[in-house]
Length: 340
Image 1 (cartoon, rainbow, N blue to C red):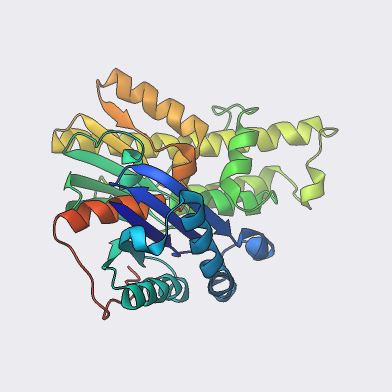
Image 2 (cartoon, rainbow, N blue to C red):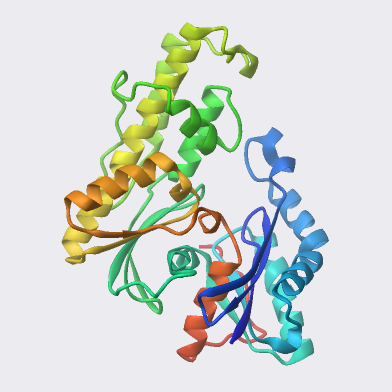
């Protein structure tokens, strides 16, 4: 059964064709990220205008790459939230138009649950139940998954999301946006034990808080490092570079340790041996290494999506849509965006 997936929750415009929930025939992603860089964040107005301009071409490209037509599509799965209102409505409206014009059923799919499902793409369905950590620029959440239609929230961030904290630290250091990739790159050269940062405690032990560690970095930089411009970062200024590397490494390490500790605690509380990691930050190589090592020590089974499916994409939407459709889930033309 061929499913057309559509994803427009943030700055990406994505479409994919997936067969039987796992086999990916196409996965097209168009990003407007370059238009947002100078603002150090996603500008909703820019995002949904670019999605309006590109969604027809992206969907058409996905169908052509998969060598199928709309006559072959048996379901349209579309992200209905959470995300940016205007962006979500672009995808939802397009999915409704296809459904109405072609008589194809369509289904709204939760964006975060799709990230959980991403680890099922191009492999056998994961053993149930399991704990899932979704860690991205907008969300950091722990879930207990009995099945893909029975998902319970265990904990979430109380302030900044993990990816958002990376972005803010990169801005403090006047590096680049998004902050995750550049901090990961610089941290490889740094000493993660040089500076002792810490994440704030939370009332619920499975909640997260990254605002405090971000502020700690800010105070440390103001006291110890004069950052005038991104151009100051150069290979000729070894002493300056070394301190930047150490800040990145120390910050990244404490954040990753927090993610690991709370994920392992969730597995212990829910008495499961299966742990799934998803979301954009799951592409971080150091995160994968540390999680894999800790999971091995605890005799846990750990699953990551392929790196191309960590970022927002439509293949995960189509895959989850298929599973829910087979359980009898449907949407109608009253479907609207769910912001949270």
